[in-house]
Image (cartoon, rainbow, N blue to C red; front, side):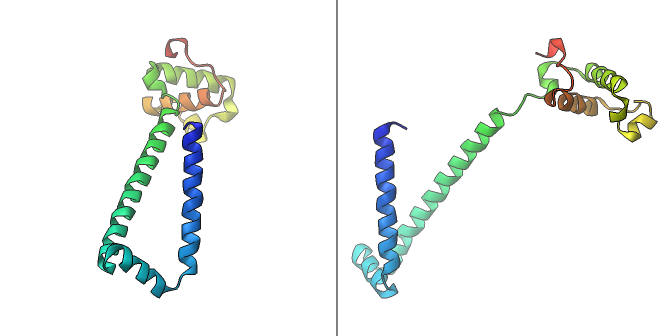
Length: 141
């Protein structure tokens, strides 16, 4: 946002704050009177308010979706998407465990590494890379 848009946004937000304060200070009857003067009937004012609220909800939803998409773009690429296959990931994980036997999960240690699925191996490999405990495989970069 450029400087003039930021200034205009700040001025608009101050104006809204003053309007809200004015409305809060008014009695219910005075608010109803202002709405009838502006829109003809309470029902017409209600319809305008409902459209404004729906528009605000849509805008908020669009902003939240955009923020979520931006956050997803910042997530690390999974190992499988970087060209690491299950057997290579499994080999890397098993080599790490040979060097660090105390970190082998107990149930896996009892099976001597047998039964480690490719998906589990990829997930473990990714975690070890993300934690900086092992280097990423050369063909995965």
